[in-house]
Length: 451
Image (tube, rainbow, N blue to C red; front, side):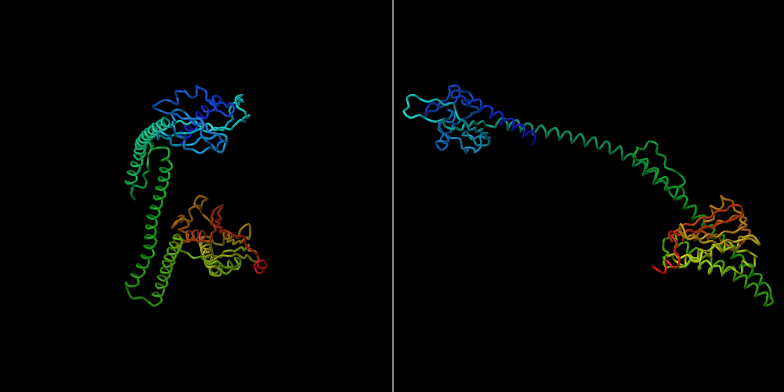
């Protein structure tokens, strides 16, 4: 379209230039209009293969044709006189071909004729020159086919090149897919080595290797979990079986049967607690725990939860230091925080050395926080980073108390995440500290009541 417009504009400009160049060849002498022999006898208007035509009209005579080329004969150019000074338009030539006509309004050179009685005045004439567009159409047609051929060849070449490039790129994809297909639960430790992969594939390979590492860690945790569960259940079950076998081996006094029943009941309760923790942990990891938030006093809840552990602490002659504000109002799930406190207190009472000290602290800002620490810790700073793992217990800690299965702090970590908070543990200079931080700033009672 651009080429057609440019060529057409050049054609029209050439036609107008030709017309303007021939205007001086038309003169007016008195009331007569004369045409120079050079224009009348021009070969351009006599060529049999490509006739050109011109016509001169007089506006004073209602656009009557006063001069025409010999090639036009008695015919007239079937176009209207333009309203502007010059114009170019399409028309059908007398020989039936399509052409273009350039029309120019002008006043010819005027000269009075002495033989005429009345003086004449200059007239405004319209000079129309036509030229057929056969050559232009042929040129545009050849150009159209040339562009079509070039574009078709370029498209075919581009498609072939693209096919080669895509095939080469998919070759790397096929290799990657083959290597991924060979990975199963046994070979998760293997990594995808793809040194000759395209640059854009490297992030994918790296993320796949990261995923394989996470899968490997998950499988190892699941295997360890199954092994630990079996071990933790086997020990109390073996104790139950031994106690019952000893009781059944001979008749005993009621007092002896009562002691065995108490021992079996204690073992059963510990097994029940471990199963409950496992179920709670599974729901927490599956994001199935429902949080019911309501205003509550964290200070009061800390004192209330300690009542269940006060007798055990007194039996072990433990000292309790309270660092609590008068009140600490938060908006959270009271039962889940109570479960956290029970696990904190249980660990503290169980692992504090005889005559040791337990410190329970609550802070309002910058965020509401509960901190429970105890003396007598035998864990190193590195060991403290493992206390939230399932069934993990330091060997010395395991020896100190056999009533823990190693799920309490793991459950606490998941509950803290469900509540939107965080939990941290550290061991420093024989003091073990666990800190639970909520995601909100606490309020005072007066401020809470005003809202």
